[in-house]
Length: 338
Image 1: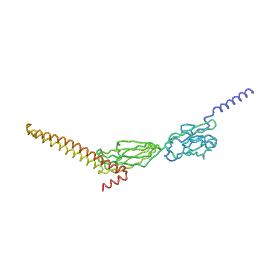
Image 2: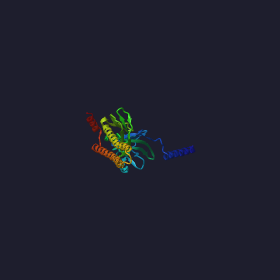
Image 3: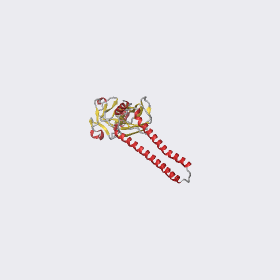
Image 4: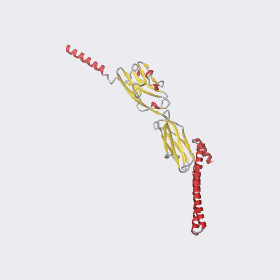
């Protein structure tokens, strides 16, 4: 009987030591918000986590951190908020709501959300030697309604339009559409990021043929699905300059070619009728050749002059109306139509 009692005491002592050395993983679990949380740029976001089963966490260490455990963005320990150990860029930007800490629930509030706040957040609880954590994903979003369409003066290629918009995150989807909602293929797309890491978008469209009706620039945030757009109304008169210049160039080229061809034909006919022994034949031949060369040089000069005048006029028009937004464009169309 004595031996049995000794053995039982020894077994109880060993089990107690094992319990002290290896804490049970069933003491509690940490449950955070599942799925990504959308955080508006410049606004606030709240991240909550809860102990399961519910129990008081007032005596526990509660730590929120991003990539590194040793760089907390918020630290609560021994019933106190330890601001001195917080990562510098989160100082005065975070707050721990502890209204339900007696039930094991805390909420981290982040103010003035920036693009750098996008990513994973670890919610960490420690009670003695036992600890658990959960991870919550934050997605920063920014949408802008500031969309501008710039229309360049028509040239020989057609009508060039540019759509500009800034203040987006993540990079938005961007496209041109006509009045029927059909997608118009852009000539080019480009983007850049400002000092806040927000995306500035630019998209160009070249309309080679006359296009009347609405042309709209659409941007869509891929996370929220929010869509913004602006449109302008194009009038056929915008394409008339291109047609006029084409007619002028064709007419001038035709006149120049005719001016060169006619003396050549006349000279050829005279050459057939006048014998080579005629003393004036050589002079006429030299004169005709000089005239043909002079006309060719004149044609080249006039062509260059026309091109110079055309590009000067195009640049002056562009300087006079560099940024034509939707309202100004609609007003111009109204004046053309009236």
